[in-house]
Figure: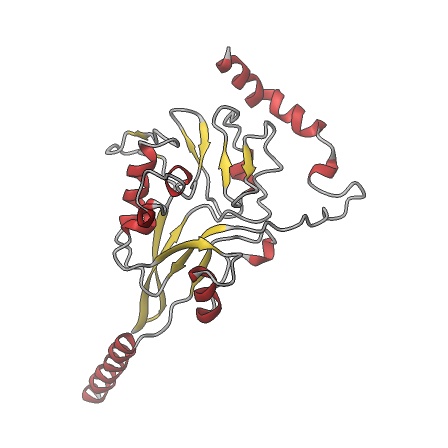
Length: 267
């Protein structure tokens, strides 16, 4: 019966529900932008330090391990070693090169759900499966309500949601909500799995609405920034920008000198 209901929703049912919903649910009744709701008093989030992330993927594997066996799991891996693999991950690390030779740098960029203050994934969900908790600002998915229509994934400008192909439900980072409030764990372990696993302390966790928290302090002192502010989603997660360390600067200077010497020899 549930499968039949899901098939109906994925067909014309979901479209009918969305089309029937009042425009005021997303925009004001006059067509203007919806009024800004009062912000939450508490907003848990991650702060990623791009200056010390080494791209080791410890955060990715620890996240997968914890969540596949926790309340959010299991997270499927289909044909993991085939030509067309499919797997569900809450956290991924993208690596790319920046700059121009010889002054190039390798940048490791972890990415997961940003737990926006105004998440676009929430109002588009036809069943109310996507929601934002008032007590801590965490954006979650109710799997019992999710029909796998992918509307939330299309609405998310950050590509932070992934469909579990086996269960046909949308998944995303939960900030390990089943871990951070677990009183059976020692206080020092009540953090997201990715934060605990990071060997360089590149990941920080806390309340960004608390001006005295560690995450708020580093955002102020290091010029932390949110991704794509032009979308006005107000991401809770922040990134600390890379800075040129003395070691990197020395290596770049040495490369410039070697190039200059090589050029002089050729002349």
